Image (cartoon, rainbow, N blue to C red):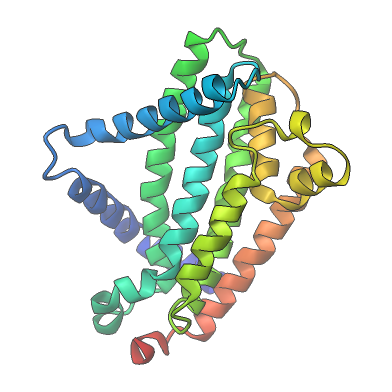
Length: 260
């Protein structure tokens, strides 16, 4: 772990510059430029709110904000996982010519995803104000919840990044699993209201995405305290995943250039 923190200190400026360059390149040829980072999530929110709120008549309080909180958390997790699988292969030229700890590549990517998540959160706050959602001090608990989401995603991402080098079908398998998690995470429905018994308990406890979404909605929309016990458990799991991922990357650091 000492080597990990040393490398983070050494390469974090590169990670920030790389993230900025990627964000600029995404909108370089676009007429609307950075406005797309606002337009895209806002349009998706309107579409999903219309379909699940009006077509399927969902009566969850503050449903538009409910959906947007779920989408904000999901999009970050989805981007982190999907973006990690082929990350080393997609950076073949850099990996084979210059030494850089491979988790720095994921760190740089994560900065772009955090930036986009921040924009989605700003839109969410604006929507909450529009819907007259009462703000309480419990909303501050969104910070540790998002930190846990980041650590969990980063840990899983490092592990997938390693195995994505040699397992060609991992990207397809990851896509299938993520699609299943997408529908089982309660993005467009309230798991507490729609499900009961063991299935509800399983989804809210064993599915970290559903659990963290539920906690975000509790603190942001309903002024409730989060489940500190659940957050502690998933924080511990996230730390373990990060340690496992770091050790895997360190152990195989010199083999990636040969394999790809």
